[in-house]
Length: 282
View (tube, rainbow, N blue to C red):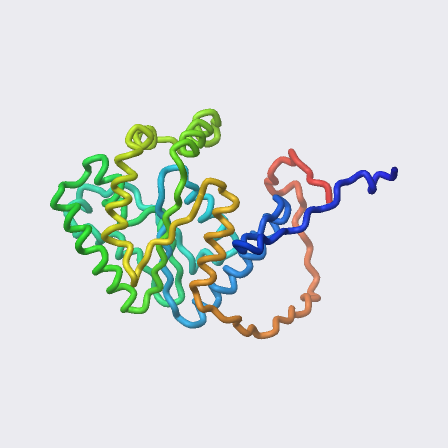
């Protein structure tokens, strides 16, 4: 038997005719992710050219994979026109402002995309569960939030809200993985640990939040995030399906001829080069 013959043949993607789900290998996952990232660039170019404004809200339990999905979404996009907003806890001054004020300040201008890694929905989740807001502040939020979102859409902003859903068991496994990994231990805060102890409280808060804010005009889209790779592909492809982007025609780019003027490079030893510790084979 030859060496090539001993290799297993590559598995082809298989689509289940019953539910339309395409099952792919890990290698095909990378190819499909790359294709979707290229489509995201095409979407961004259309948004820039047409002056549209897109807001994507990413919510879900701790360790649900929001950061990982956002990194894959923005990997190829132009960071000048796509911003990720992950606001820290409000300052004392911000606590005296209108609750939505610091979020509204981050909304996109024409041709921009803003992705909120957690958003004003902090009030409906962690602030409610941990007692960081009063009952009156919470009730005000629930009444005003749908009105605010309807106003944003009527002003021309495309608003898409995602909730990443994972089970109690999967969250616990991911928490433990962070504890065991020194490179990711920083991701685990005392608030995250408390989230495990208050699993049911968070579940009830999410259900109540959906009851008020999962509206016909601005629905929540729930993403099954038990498997991170599957969640990334499903969310990105769904977002692309919601934005009516079209291909943008580009002017042909021709590189100019190289300058012919003589140039003498300074001696290498006259500059402070970074020590060569690695060399990657070509």
